[in-house]
Length: 369
Image 1: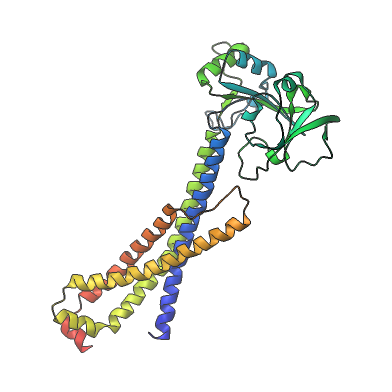
Image 2: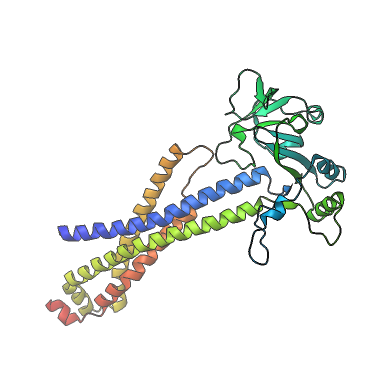
């Protein structure tokens, strides 16, 4: 093979490899992040109902305007409403959460908010929560000295420290920087509050909230029910967009590589005209010649695709060394198979024209050349 042929072949394989790398890399990242997110949401509790003042999903009016001023006028959910829902059995387990600037107050089943295990110490007792004891659970990155932690001018005794959660955890608060105290012990300003209900029947919970707020049948709800499944759906749309971008970028590179593969085959047809003519003169049918050149085209494409997939695998090893342990990027079977199928189709598509050109050569004229 001449140096110019080697150069053309290398460029063609490089184009195919870059295209397959872009496609497989996008699918690999999307699959890994989506798997990590879903596992985090499932571990947090996908069935938890958040009773809050505002909805997570934008609620637009008939003009497409988000009427934020209507939500700003709504009252926050209160501790009294939490007690009412708990007494009426709105769910299998309930918790009240008050979000402050420097700490978060909790009541009831506080583990509905934070599922992260404790690295040391213990959790809250029912007596500490109901009595508003000055005790605290903190994240592993919270700075403190000794066994006491000061918040809003009040000392709290540290009774437990959470294990490191990292960036892959799903929680309404930053667990590594969290400071949880009984809600009755909060001294600072409460910015917002929530009632978490596990195993809730949404219709019954709505009826109880309307009853305690004394809303008439013609009045709309002045509270919102939120579920984290909405965020999962939103992230799924983002993942789909990233996958499409990867395919678009990869297809442009594959076009360059595909034209290179076709060019190599056309050159091969010109150089092997005598052999093709001899095979045709000896009785070889056109489909035999077509299959021969298609195999070469597919072989070139698969070689480039295999190189692209290999680069993705190496990239995942490097990323896993750099990323936190909460997120693992792995080359999935789905992504690798997609890359191989794209390589196969590329070889068949761009190898078809040169293969049929070789099969239609006149045997006599080909042997003369």
